[in-house]
Length: 311
Image (cartoon, rainbow, N blue to C red; front, side, top):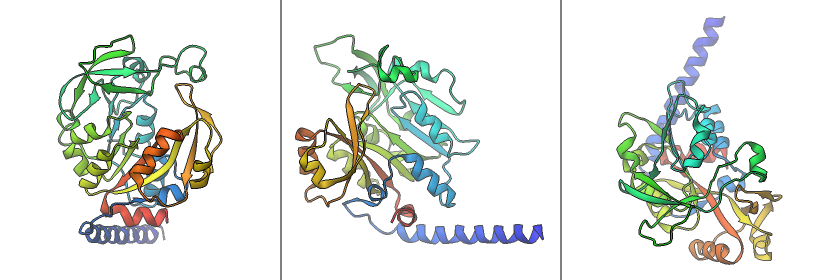
């Protein structure tokens, strides 16, 4: 009886695989639209773990390798590998020297690069406006010395302080092995996302899913669409208190929490359509406390599968 059950399970898995291939072959010929799709925000998806978990449990995606741009304390790299294989690698990029001690006991499958990601290989300057200090809320979590707000600035700027750090900038395509199979890319680079994408055309052509911080740079949208991805927004991150305009267009609004730099923030889900995304996003950032959202970029071969999970 066990053998019959096993044969039936194998047959069903093979059928699923054939169906997925047919869907993928069909969708590879279908261009993606230019709008931000609301499926994930509508379903309250706030993390890449939620997506990877649901796609893996449905049998549609088993990630091989990962790229973590802006790896912070290493927590996101660890979470990614939970959805990989025993042979998976996570190529983690973290240029801030204050964050490197958090990688000392890392999983051996995390390949750490102590450089920033960029469009070209060069030297650069990392500006770190805030660091978790003793007595801060995040210090109680064991993150004293950590920062999540480092960003690359022009290296020819005259004003230098203890908050400026010289770093090496690299193209991901030049340092990640050519035989790597990067299925999932996460970029949280405080404005450096577009330059990083321009430095990894090979990797972006492989990726099935990307989780990319978006703070209003239209080049990020252009580049992701240029690689053929369908784009989805997720909850929007605001600082301070919700304004009447935010309450009109976003909901539900979460309770407030404290970011690593001490700023009080909340998440809100967009519930009305965008009329002019770029203009409205800029207005929300300049006058209503919007910080960012995270975009999910999905390969056309997996769009129908993602939207089946998140209608």
